[in-house]
Image (cartoon, rainbow, N blue to C red; front, side):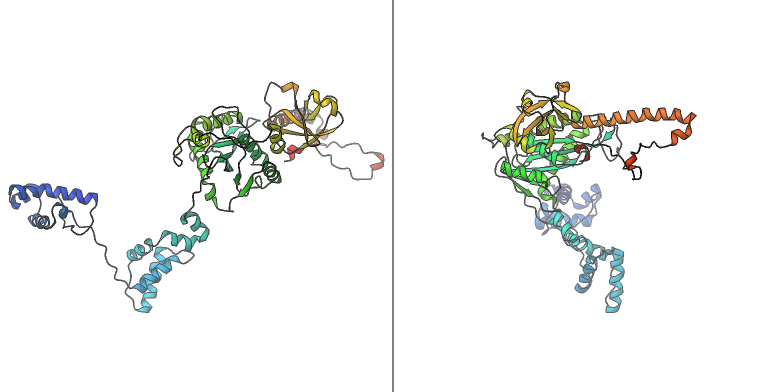
Length: 492
């Protein structure tokens, strides 16, 4: 049965109202065009004769469009303006009152003023009609209002390398660290604002640090060996947040030497970093979702499979082969095409050695021995070191591969020295530290096994703590607890 309704003349119609008008016309047109009596149509279609008569009268006034049912008219509230203003004010007080509390209070105040009672539904309708921005500002303060409702200016740099952004994120994946234990890695990205291209990145374990930022920036600045990753050069401006890794003296000095400016985002205002945050979301949802060990709401303890180098390769392939090659929805072209443009020459350091001097890890002093330079249990040699035996030099290195180091003497680059035992392999600083830790644990386990044998026969010896012999001259002094020697890199 077709529902009855009145004319909608003078009111805008919706799609559903137009459909109902068409259905009514399909019934009425036999009377208008063929002369079929309305009484016959009422019986055939099960429509009240009075409704058909109203439809016909509406059609004669406004045609088929007039057959659309009238929209529901808003019911006029019978409460006074003062009551409405009071309800809105109660809804805006802080801490926020529930609708039931507002309803109770307005009627309590209304009794004293002689106002008519207000229904709960009326109070709910009035409070629900308040501006969401006004509610946020009243209950959550100006910071929350600014982040949700203030207009954000989406600035875009005028050309490639005019503005780079750098930031970190903890990835939604578990991998295996150097000891085979589960670990959650971090990602540092250097993004070109104009093209949205990734100029450099760094996947690492542990907290973000100045060295991770420097390594990602070093990769971004120097030309890559990969032909499908052309992004390089020195930016005019580097846009970062207020993390200690970005506010370090190391990065500030690098910016001064390479002649680019560092701009820090406003504290507690994430809008300026939205472009790089969007890239992080893309990597987490598109790349990591297909990798083993992906963290989800329903799976917070997945089994890690990948190692750090394997994840690094996966991230690099996704950036260069997928992200850079597809059209970006905001700039309407691919990041590679936007960065390349019509061809241009980026600003570069004079040599890669100059860049390494500025961006590789904090300088570490060492003495040149006759058999080379010793560092982290490795020995580095180069024929050019023969003239510096006994001299103090500064070494700089990439913690991702310490099979080679770069040696400086009095701020002048001398040479690159290699570890002959690992020159055909890639060994990271983490690998060395993990190997040392594993060796200590293995030795400690062997010691405990042997002491357990002693405990079965001589328990008093096994439980006694060994004491170091005391020199006669210091017998009356309190012996100092020996300290385990650590490297500077271990203490960072």
